[in-house]
Image (cartoon, rainbow, N blue to C red; front, top):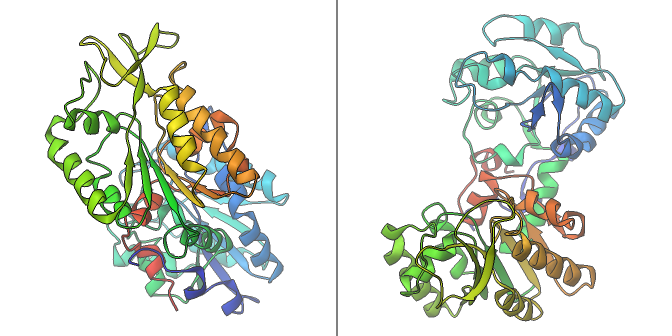
Length: 404
């Protein structure tokens, strides 16, 4: 297994004495901020256990995070200052925001002035160009702020940046509780799952998920393919797809995935009926047709009820399900019905103890929230790119650096 190893192979908060020390904690506070207010605090809530434990252990806590893509420049709209207020509310204790461009000495001075148990949030790490290039000088600046490095940002662990990977080679480095829990949950899917295992893969493009599909056909007993990427697979089988989004240059790749699946004994489920429309707008007039009967002027925008029923039947024989990517354009009703129906079916099976359901990446968490079932899944990852790369079997630099 090339991806994150099991949680037991990582150094954790249990392996080090934090008393009187300064812990530099890499968290993911890349949260949506609208009019100066945090619109979704999910990522904030997940780091609370780690922060409370460190404070209880009498450590100063210094938080590092990015927000957006400022490309090495100070961008006022991407400041973490509004996030400090949301974190303060979630923690129920003061959080000092430190405005620094990472070129001045403000960060170091603020940490020196803090007392054990204090919580400090530094400004956006990506305001410095050295963050994304893993610049040794910036790594040294980060390391000079404290004694121990804690990574609690699985969602950023696929990037070898100064605050996610570089610093872990300079200071004693351990995993935080959120990262530890994420890897424990995800490892149960690929490393030691209850079989049979079913992967539901959606989204727009085959090209962005080719590595994922190639890795999954070798590990899964069955894969359901939906979303716009299913159109490419249908076209590869000479099905009519009208004006649907598809990647014509990926037809041979789609055929190769199906060939590999056949060789590996992995069953591939493609849509057998679809919801089509001539306009991609909310409330557009739509119809459900067999995949053989898509009109030349129509677009495939969701899977149909027969496809949902086919997948539900297959799911009843599975013990583990991993979901990455919605199966339709769920943001635009009525093209959310396939995703909502499948989400509900999987949640029902998880509730009944019939299977373990793990989801994450891209729009998947948003789709499950839309369906109202996110809290009924066994685990929903807050990670996007890291979740996808982990499923692809790739090593995650931020996690590799924490191995014992």
